[in-house]
Image 1 (cartoon, rainbow, N blue to C red):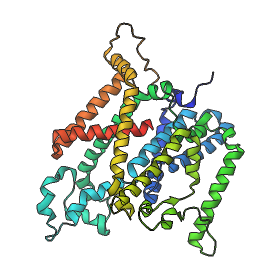
Image 2 (cartoon, rainbow, N blue to C red):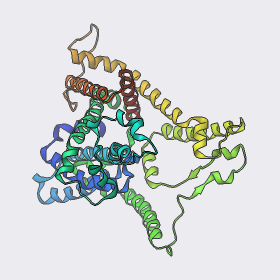
Image 3 (cartoon, helix red, strand yellow):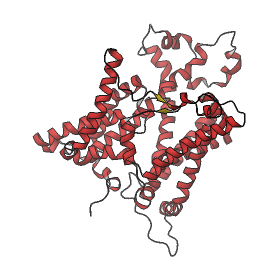
Image 4 (cartoon, rainbow, N blue to C red):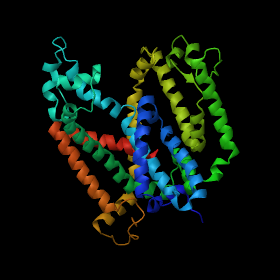
Length: 416
């Protein structure tokens, strides 16, 4: 019987040298586009990575006809996709994009009036930042190049240290995925809708069957037509736009308490419709119900006298961010609790112990790395993060709390 795509051990024919080289080369234009648009990482399905492998799959179909031996397989294209997704997340919205200004802003804009020098300069580790105004002013005012030796020399240390820190942070996620992959994919058979499209593109190194789908081209045509027309409307106002993102129910309710729903947009995003098509019905229904439950809370808060006439005040009145964070933590705890038997078996595999009456130890030969290697890598990475944070002046309990909360949210996001 043919196995499900998600459970296929792609990596046995995946991590080839050419796949890594092609992935590294594509990271450069992909990252540039991600930084310029600022949007790819805000969506769970990173469209720049999908576009890259779509073009690769089309080229690979041609290569398979002309030079079959040079064609890439499904696993190689999937490897490139994973590399592009990881790089996009690191460079795009609210990550590396803001990392540089965070390291220099406090020094560049310190004045006698704001007293930033007296307030917090002593708390910023110099070995992780750069306080030399002659070096950092060019970032804000221009007129210089980063690729001058004196500037590069000043930034080599901070760049290397922060790079190792982020590598350790992300590598722990990979190790955690190794531990829970089999439980979530093979035992619980969780559905990951955002990976269905990339895997369909990667199948057989680019299958003509995927590109012959009439429904695919109908959906692509409808979505593309709307975006092209609306894009032309931005450039040439004589072309009428298709109003798919301008409806707002909130403007019809101006009096309390119903006015507390504030901005309630009704928009048509073709890509969201496509992703929702792959989602389990109960999951997509839950999103819809909980969204309106938030609105109901705002109405109740307004009835009780809380000022809820603005999206920000609504969030403060009903603590939407706190509710979302708590939900993520609960989902992460549930995911680990459901995997407790598997995780115990993984630990026995790592330490080479088999309890009486228990089944055989789990086979990790089809994992990206052995369980023991993943455990060693995670422990070493955690040790580095602890030492790094201690050297920056963080308290031990703050470091521990940060790591627990951060990775619990990462686990919950992956579990979803």
